[in-house]
Length: 273
Image (tube, rainbow, N blue to C red; front, side, top):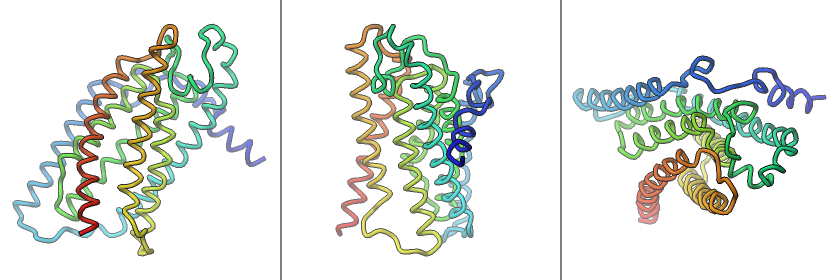
């Protein structure tokens, strides 16, 4: 009974089944909103950093339990999105498998490569939309870092802005690859933010840089999936849907991966000194 209730609320609710990405029906679904949000985020973060620098505060400000509560909320949200899109993907495979015979698509191929003509509607795209909206909550970590440690990194600004744009492109162009990307990303976030909450409330942390290691594994898995999308697109008749947006996504991911690799190497070297 409980399982059926969970499935209903995560896959069969009318708002989920009948979801459609549209500027008139979906909040924050326009290019203007996206560009305005990114610009406001960058300006606000830089302005806060400059303001605290002008005040010449040597120590950061305490935010009390706010960062811990934010980590707990993000861990729970990520876990719900992971379960939701996993169950929704299974439901979509069950309901549309008969259509795949025309395009000779298998379940594994569908996870990486949507058939050409796929529209941003239905269960999977509802959870993609939920993931997109959750990206705005991730932005608060930048302000936490500035207020608590007076630190603003170029990588953090680029990373958060790029991930927000990427999640928007997934919906705007019904881009292939997003199901696997969301599954991998949300399970990683659930672990990372759960760990941050664990340490924030005073419990013992891991004996190795768990957060950095999880993010490095995530980037590695996403890179392998990008290679898989490219191979399927070249072999499959008709190719994959939203391949232009996927190409732009790949470039952004490459930039993020290079910046993160530099950060990861620096962090590991400092931990051994």
